[in-house]
Image (cartoon, rainbow, N blue to C red; front, side, top):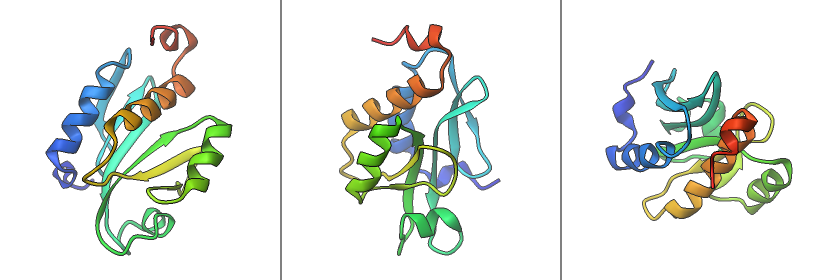
Length: 133
């Protein structure tokens, strides 16, 4: 496991604030970076990817320099739209309807909140998903 400090503290703080509003979600260290889960399902995974050393993620995002990357789930119709839009989105290197997004310094945190809320809705039990506005 790598040091979770590789993700800037301001990014972790913003993501913690968003995920705090997702019923019963919890944060834990991942094999690299940090992830938030509902039960045993990963809603969000964030880490710093390095060209060449983070394998498939670096290739999928076409990285030429280190970047903060998050992965999340999207509904089928939204998945195609996001991945088709290109940068900062890309198809993650694993899973069904898993989107990767490079979190840039000028990231739209309102959009990120919406994307993560939808990722949660995709994975959470229906009774928990209904608790969201």
